[in-house]
Length: 213
Ligand code: AMP
Image (cartoon, rainbow, N blue to C red; front, side, top):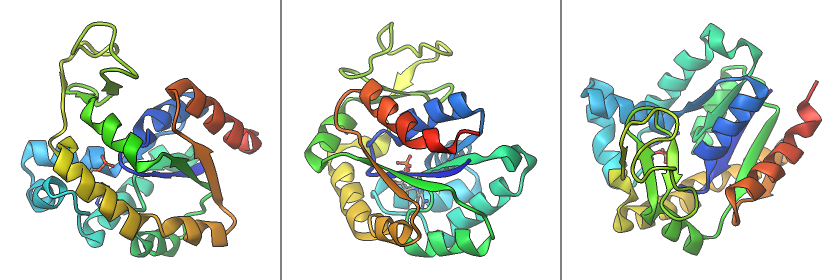
């Protein structure tokens, strides 16, 4: 299964992509995670991306298209993949089509803006494996410690309140039109992501059941 995961920042794409990846045994790639790793390492890519990310804007299309092209051409993707956070603009979607990659579904996790703002303020990320937690809705077993790898948790710089608002504006303006793009190709599936993580997971798995062999 070749899957695109869409949704506002904080909708739960990373959380659900980890669950789908585990169940289907296919890799999940997050352009956001790759960019954050590049920022941390101080690579030229990271230096170019940092200011856009800090402002809640998108990194230029050609930068992320290059990253994804490399990734999709690797053997890891032979049995399928999940794209978390790519494409995020119409030109990115067109570039993906131009790569000749067949997409089975574009799954959109639907969450209202008010809920997003609340979620982002409580989001914590593992400094070791990148797993995502929420202080109230998905807390780790031990405060500030990752359940999977025991590394400490941190708050993403771009989860600051004013940056979240910029990211939401960017989402509605540049990313949300992708829903029409994939609906026109008959690939769009929308699931409710407002309530508990388990409810969203159940809805996601039900929606993807038709792709099981
Ligand atoms: P995320 O972790 O998916 O929320 O991404 C964090 C930030 O990385 C975004 O706010 C963008 O600045 C950048 N980013 C991630 N994916 C993309 C993409 N496909 N196109 C452009 N910028 C991206």
